[in-house]
View 1 (tube, rainbow, N blue to C red):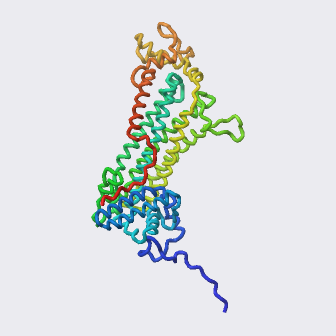
View 2: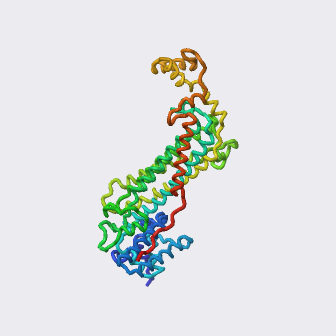
Length: 477
């Protein structure tokens, strides 16, 4: 009798492993396993996951939920796991799905089955909510430092070019002369608002969610405030269901990043214009430009164009997470796994853009003669001429119409009622002596206030962009 061909077993017949043991009779379909796994991206939260676990283990021992000795063994094991990661020895396994189970399995290999006690009184639901808050808290600190560096570059460039004049524009048409320093300080104000938005949102995300467990809390006598103190949180979440399903803090980060990228794009656009042959107001540093594959003369402002182009990417991430959240019932749903990739990519995009722009600003060379030539366009004196007519007794609307008619008839701004020369660009900027005006003293006032702000942040350590180390606190048993 001919031998029957050997049949392959169905691919879902393998025994389940990990957290699937018990409830499930078969392993996950390989295609779905890859689709379901998040370790390829949530491994970025390795340090934060270990920090949260160390604090949680310390609490379990402190509260007598596990023994003090068990807690200390778990904490030492976690430190060893972290050491493997930091030295590049950690092997991530896709079949373990996510960062939490990968670390727990690595801990089991270090200390044996005792590792299974670490997950007492918590769920991956509150664990991931904690990790993401810790991660974004760290990233906001880094981003704040990058913003301060960019603001510092703008202040330095403004002070070095305090007497440089160029046309200010409305509708991209020449309007009135301004100081280059005044123009640069306008961007300082934008980025300062961005900095404040990030710091403000950091305050709102400063709630510790661990202890909410899956959604309803836990029956164990946990001490959430202890864990919060160990991890540097100022408060604990007030509602366990909200704690595991809230992603407002991530949405705020994406919104703040979107606004900051928009500001970067506006600055990038002006630098692209100013460095063009048509304007010729500046030369961008070679290190942030590229050439053409066919035209030898080209020097393309690629860094600025890429920053401008990446804004849509960050906007898209904000819209993606808003859409993910819009119809989710309480509490945790697997949809929330989609919160991390938009956040991680935004962190990379914003951080890179801020660093590049700060270096680019520091290396710009301005062309004073080309700018003053443009600022000396006689039509830019039109408003000052109208103001002169008003001081001579004419209602402003009549003066506006009179000067406008002179421009229309190509007579130039001409002369006022009693004649006289047109004011120079220097005289026009100095005439704006009110607060926030273009007079030299007022622009220097802006610069001094900006320097004082930056020095205050430096004194409080907010300029330090060093990535915080894993925290878990010392056991107080």
